[in-house]
Amino acid sequence: MKFIIGIGGVTNGGKTTLTNRLLKTLPNCCVVHQDDFFKKPDQIQVGEDGFRQWDVINALDMEAMVNTVKGWQENPVKFARSHGVSLSPEVEESDSEQRGIHILIIEGFLIYNYKPLIDVYDKCFYISIPYEECKRRRRTRTYTVPDPPGLFDGHVWPMYLKHRKEMDNNCSRIEYLDGTTTKEDIYNAVYESVQNSLLNNL
Ligand SMILES: Nc1ncnc2c1ncn2[C@@H]1O[C@H](COP(=O)(O)OP(=O)(O)O)[C@@H](O)[C@H]1O
Ligand SMILES: O=C(O)c1ccc[n+]([C@@H]2O[C@H](COP(=O)([O-])O)[C@@H](O)[C@H]2O)c1
Image (cartoon, rainbow, N blue to C red):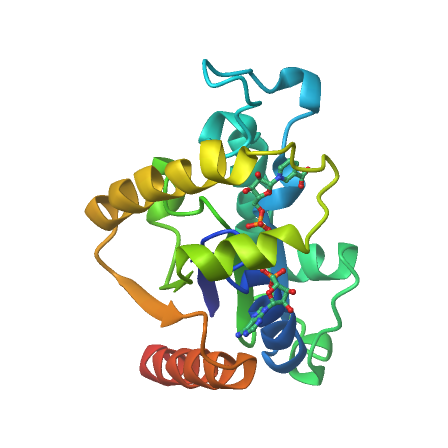
């Protein structure tokens, strides 16, 4: 069985933290990080506001991201091996590539704002945190391209609000998580919800 989990959420909401924990506990679990598909800085347009427009879907090579997801869908065993993910004995010892549960986590801040991806998820999660907490966490973070002064209020947060509205209209299956509760509580809620869905799908 193949099963795809979406972990979306606002920047610094805790997506990577949650994903890394799930990767350690879910069987045969691979990941696709949306951040790995950012285009190069010289390909990112400068907007009328004077900022490079990083927080829009065009800043990402979404075609390449979808192709990576398709690669997993076509052969999750091959994908796991080529990404150094260890497989359960049930899968390793079987002659059939189809045996066992294969899980893919798709993690990122705009994973529910791109039409070709919306229908791939078996489970959709979204982590939110309030403005002040988001701004505080973002200040402690260094991206490959550091934030210029004013980027958060001038671009990041307004784009988040816009995409959030778009996403709420696009996808009705999302389970919302409060990113200000503890890492442990968030992980437990998601793990339990995934387990229930896996049992129902068997
Ligand atoms: N539940 C939480 N409570 C407090 N801090 C958190 C929580 N989850 C993540 N963080 C912290 O917030 C920051 C951003 O987390 P990260 O998982 O990298 O976010 P994202 O991948 O959504 O951008 C990190 O410093 C992380 O330790
Ligand atoms: O990873 C990069 O190359 C990169 C370069 C410039 C900006 N980013 C920021 O990455 C943010 C999304 O990632 P995340 O992990 O904070 O959800 C988004 O708000 C962008 O402004 C990321």
